[in-house]
Length: 185
Image 1 (cartoon, one colour):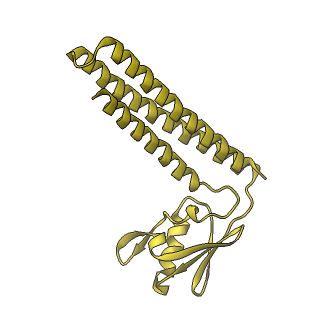
Image 2: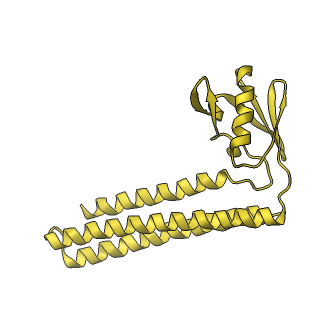
Image 3: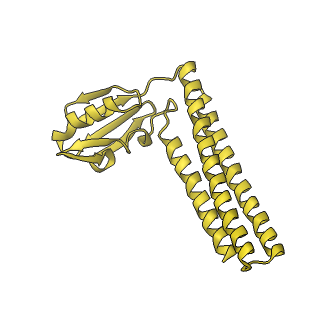
């Protein structure tokens, strides 16, 4: 049972790291990326629909994103959704496509993005630590109930700590890489 607790905690910690990484993909770094817009929700016939289900999204140039909807009637809704979003880009509608030009980032904006990267890293670390605490509580409860010996409980807690340290190191590594990418001119 105790190894299942650690395996479950390991899996949940891995998902926390993956969620942080997905959030990082949505941050603007001065280069065009489809991840900036593909998760935007567009009002399509009264239903909130992800943009990547309504249109083809491509990056023909390093500083431009092209959105080509499958239904031309949704162009206005896509334009509105982009304007309402917090990505800070103005859509340019060219008849059948929406073009987003990605301007170079200012130094101030780069620092602001780095702060949000650090904030998201700390949120992931807290989530991982909370998962560690919950798993440790389960292990201690098993020890208290007599289902787990003292030595085995101690070994399992050490394993849990190593797992936690591994995931926090991964958060730090991904965060440092994203910070480097943002600060790159």
